[in-house]
Image 1 (cartoon, protein in one colour):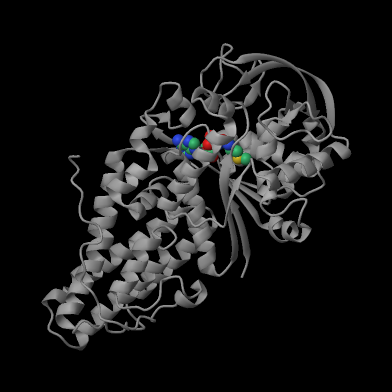
Image 2 (tube, rainbow, N blue to C red; image 1 turned 120 degrees about the vertical axis):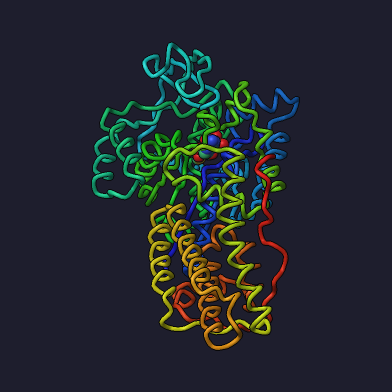
Length: 510
Ligand code: MSP
C-alpha cells in the first residue's frame, strides 16, 4: 500500500467553470480513484484561486465586493464538481484563514532565509495571465498567450531571488528525471531554467485583494505567489508538521501546459528557499481546443469562444455524467492537446459506450436471463479470455501509473472488444442450455466483472450499475485491486437483470 497526494490547479473565480477546467479535475479524480482502488492512502485536493486583479476586476464589473463575488463563483465550482462526481478530499479556497496563515508563514520563512529584497519593478502586466512580461517576451507589446494589451507598471515591490536557484534547479532536474512528465514538458522547463532566471516581483501595492505581506502590510502578495502555496496549506503547512511530512513526499500536481513556468520553475525554487523539498512530481497536460482555439474563460470574456454553450452541467444533462467523464479521459492523451467537439462526444458515446460496452452487458444479461434462469454461471480457469484480461490489467497498471488514463481505457476497451468477439464466435444466443453455454456465459461475465473494476475510476456510477446487474453484491471497488484482479472470481450471487439500455443511442443529427 502506498500513498498518493494529487492536486488540480486551483481555479480562478472570475467566472464559472467550463469544460476545460472540468478536464483537469476529472483526470485528477480518476487518478485518485485508481489509487484508492489499489488500496493506497489518497488525498485529492482541488479548490479555487480567489485573489488577484482578474478576480477583483470581475467582481467590480458585476457590481459586487470581491469576497461576495468569489463566494458565489467558488460555490459554482463545487456544484459542477459534485455533478461530475468528483470525489475530492479537500476543497481549498485561498480566501480562507488557514491559507492566509500558511502563506504568511511560508513566505516569512523565505524572507528570514534572505531570499526576498525590495526594489522597483517596471514592466508590463497581463491581467488575464496575472503575469509580468518583458518587452522581448511580448508579441508587439501584446500578451503572447491572450493577444491582449499589456499594462505598463511601475511599483516598489518585494522581489524573490529566483536567480539564486538556477544551479540547484538544474541539479534537481538531473537527479529527478521524473520530476516533470511527459518528457517534452520536462525538457521545456529545463531549457527555460538553462536560459537563465531573473528575480521576480512577488508583491503588489496597486491592489489590496490578496494576502497581506506580514513584514510590510502596505503590500499584498502577487496572486501566483499565494496560489501555489495552497498545495501546502491543505496539508497543514505551519500548523501540522506531521501532516506535511506525511503527504509532501507523495505530492503530484496535475496542471495545464500554460502554467508550467509557475509550477516547474518558481514553485520548486520557492520550496527550496523555504527549506523544503520540491513537490515530488508535476504532470503537465495539454489543452482542449475548439476549432484549434484554446477554450478558456479569459478568451471567452474577450469575445472568443462561447463557453456557456459547453458548461459541464449542459454536457451532463445531454450525455450523462459518466459518458462525459469517459470522453474527457479517453479522447486525448493526458499531455497532448485535443480537439473538443460535440460530434466527438456523440461519436464516442455511440461507439465505445452504446455499441461496445452497453451491447456487451445487454447481450450477456439477456442470454443469462433467458437460458440460465437468471443466475450467472462461473468462469473457466483456462478460458481464452483470461490472457486478454490479464494483459488489459497490466496495461491499466502501466497507464494509470504513468498518468495516461487514455491508454488504460484503450486496454479496457480492447478487453470489451475481445469479449464481444468471443460471444460472436460462440453465438450463445443460439446454444441450448447446458454446460457449453454455461462456460461461455461464465467467461463473459468474468470479463465484465473485470471491466467494471478497471473502468470504475473513469465511470464510477455506470460500473456500480453493471456490477449490480450481473448479480454481484457490493461495488467494484470494495475489494483491493490486488485481490479483485485475479481471474476466475465471478460467482452469480444475485439474479441477473436485463434492465434498460445503459447507453441509449444518441442521434448524431443533433
Ligand atoms: N489559478 C491558476 C492556477 C493556480 S494553481 C496554483 C489558473 N487557473 S485557471 O482557472 O485559469 O486554469 C486552471 C486549469 O484549467 C489550468 O490547468 C488550465 O490549463 C486548465 N484549463 C483551462 N482551459 C483549458 C482547456 N481549454 N483545456 C484544458 N485545460 C484547460 O491557471
